[in-house]
Length: 479
Image (cartoon, rainbow, N blue to C red; front, side):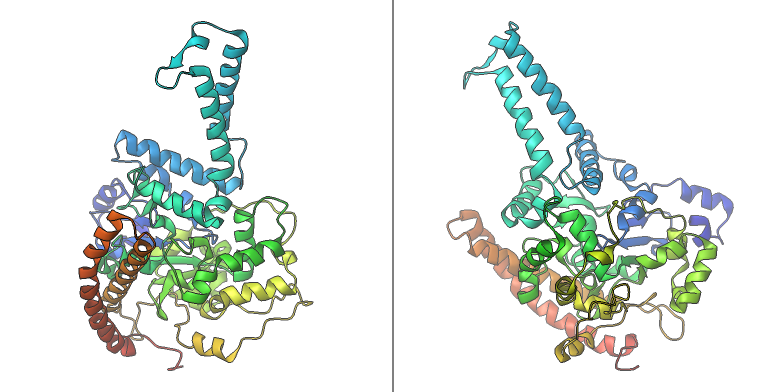
């Protein structure tokens, strides 16, 4: 990949670069020895194939470099759980359960056979025998890791979801986050699943970096993505697709009614795909690739075939096309039927109601051609007016008509300030729900001063970005 992008450099220089530590997803390429223009950043839209790209770049091992022993231990466990939950919603055949089963068996044997002195050891303060303590701890751990610490429970039961965000941030002292590498988890959720606006607003990526690097996102047909979301988040085999869809829309209420995008209210899997790539209608990610195109972009000959099907693929930056070469599809789950066979008229309409803008922004057809028995939803006039505010997705949104890269610094600064302000207001709202908390009162007084400053910054940035945006990129109105 480095040779392809930096082919003009001497061979000795290329060898030096290849030995540096390339940093983790979403940073697919990052090094002090190459300019920002040679870096590649990946905005990971959930259930669109990004996990395969992470494994393709051997990200977990790269993240563990230069971490303390405790940091390596917790991050290694984070990646282990991430892989485990890709395979099963409620995993039973796991390392945790194997260890717990061994402890339970040993504890029962000690108690049944009355093996001294082990059976007589007790905890002085509570007078609890050690075998009983080990037995109860193992049972709790097994049940917790199998049924509670799972995607369906954490992602769909709001109190547990919010407890999880609090727990990884404070009791665990953020030991499972890796800010320089933009991966792991903290109070903002799964860092590798943050939207481009959030990455800017939280300071994980600076406007300068975003303006100079190459950024990539992979999107997917909303209908097939919805089936993938169902497979990953359902409460087992007994929850059918229609029941799941009805519950999913209720869970999405804070976003659909109030536009709430903070993880505290709207888990990352609920968000439409355009929220990851756009902000106020403007595309922030430089390059967007469709998952349906990946099978062609895995090889150079296939890339030529993809260009024949959609000539805009030729506009993808070279560094993006090189990154996708040989990309596997490693996290695909086996299903008993095709994704389009899950649908009936109600679930088709529900999917469109929740993710209608994804169809227009990324150019997907509302009609499901594999199911001619289903009537395509009819967009309302309001839907059409809303879609007009958005840039259609671009293969290289930073490229101007004359073939030169445009600076988007003003827009990125505006997005950063807007997201910062929203985070402050969300924090104040959460504190208002805990009126009796002394800490909440202190935080309210601390953020009050920041709010007025951020408001002024946002207004200034918005005015600048609006005047800049009118001439920076061809819009749908120009067409």
